[in-house]
Structure formats: structure tokens, C-alpha cells
Length: 317
Ligand SMILES: [Zn+2]
Image (cartoon, rainbow, N blue to C red):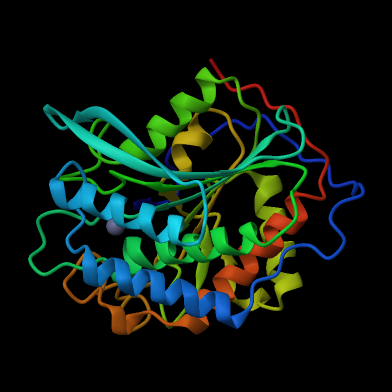
């Protein structure tokens, strides 16, 4: 992920969500403190068993296999989605981990939830406990929540993306391989996307979630409502002065509605960000309390999205 200052490129929009509710599931999804503990456990297991998790390396593939195992232990029909892609000046192998929750109507629109699991290469001792593992654990816990819920009106796709981190500097062929691959697949299948939501660095014990400018306005509005409903309004900040290039950007740039939820203030003091991409990004910096807040907001967002009318979205050519 990288942040950009004010004045960089702007994006067109192609969706307005209709918020008129229809008959949805009675009580909606819930996210309990035990789910947050499950999230922390899954993140901790991932870091302890699979560090580093650099994309395009055998250890990266082991991490994908490990997440697959975590999901299958929950009884979920998870699968690996291996692919090759350009990485700097060479072709490398990657693998996303995918679990889908089909709607009653297969032609229903899709909601995509993403977290990258790979680590930033080239940093000695780097664990990526918050950057990569925390939201990957959260996504495992959310998969468990969805498994115990009734079917939703929308198709849901949870993806642990590979190759989010750049090897050197972010460029067209360095970083975001997993989300770009995902967008290609969605376009090829002609899937309608209602929301593509990226979760990143949301386990920070000092949790301040940012919604950057380059997220679809209707989804930003929905995120605000979700935080209100979850009782964590103050944890969400809407920044119109920064754009964050994260896994949601592949969807956003393709004209799909997309949202980034990220805590990009990760350090020993506010504003320092000195834990980010350093060996200081360790498990003691993440808490189940923060994962609870993040999980509650995401679940309320899903509840709002699944009571909004399905919307047709035509991706840009
Ligand atoms: Zn990172």
C-alpha cells in the first residue's frame, strides 16, 4: 500500500447505491468478542508458522497453504487460485486464497472482501503482524461468522491476496498482483460487483481507521453508517486529502465500487508510522480489542450492503 498527497489523479464513478431496504435476513450478521479472539489467534498462527511470506517465493506459497488449512478447519470450501504474473522484470508464481459464499440467486451481485497476506520483501526480521497478518486473521474470523449465518441476498467472495507488497517501488508490475488478477477474473466472468472492500492494518492497538479519498462515495457513506451502528464512530476518519493505493484500487480503477479501510498511522507516537515496514511490526502491536472494532464495523457494513438493493455496475472497458 502507498499513500499519495492531495492533488493526484482523480477517478470517475459509475455507481450510486440505492439504500431502500428490502426484506433481508432478520437480525443480520454479528461479530462477537470471541470472533475477535479467533481473528487474533488466526493472525498469530500465520505469523508464527509463516514468516516471511514474500510473494512469489516458496514461503509465500506455504502461507497461502496455511490460510487454506485454517479455512478448511472451519469446514469451508476454500481453494487456492494460483496464477503467474509479471513481477518487475520476471514472471513469478502467486496464489490467492478464495472462499465464496453463494447467494440463493447465482446472478446476484458480488461483495468482495480482501486482505493481503504477503510480507514486504527485503526487510530483515520483518513479520508483517499488522500489515498483512492482522486482517488476514480477521478475514478468517469473518469467514467463520459467515459460515454460521443464513444465506445472504448477495454473493460474497473473501480473498486473501498475494503480491500486494512491492519488491522495490510500486509500479505497474510491482505489487497488487493478487487484486489485479481478481479484477481480471471478475471482468472475464461478467460479474456484477456491489462493493470491493480492502482491509489493511486494522489490528493496531491504537486503532484509527482511515477511509481515503479514492473510495466510492456511496460506500464511504455506508462505512460511516456502519461505524455509527457499531458504536465506533470516532474510530473512522474520512480523509479527502489523501489517496491510498491499496488492493481496492484495482477494482476502483476498473470502475467497480470499492472501499479501503486502513489504519495508516502505525507507530510509537501518532504521526510517526515507524512500525510500518520495519521489524517493529510484531504481534505485540496488535490486539483482539482492535480486531473487534474492525470486525464490528465490517459486519455492520455487510448488513447495510445486504439490505441495499442490488445495483447493476458495468465496468469500464
Ligand atoms: Zn505493507
